[in-house]
Length: 44
Image (cartoon, rainbow, N blue to C red; front, side):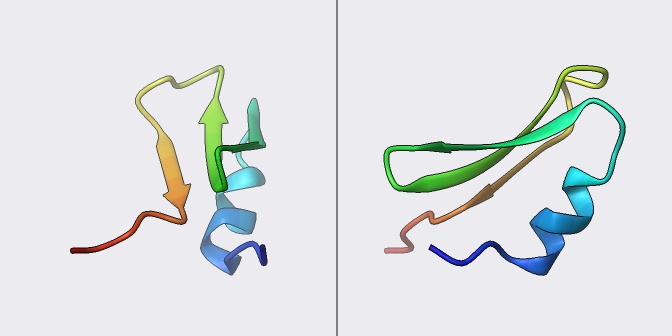
């Protein structure tokens, strides 16, 4: 799965990392837990 450029820019934040779970790509931030980003959500 290609990672969106918006997620790559989110990864540049301090304390953030990219994690792949169940075919989705998440950005998780340890320093600011309210900051999250997801790629791979299906729309109905």
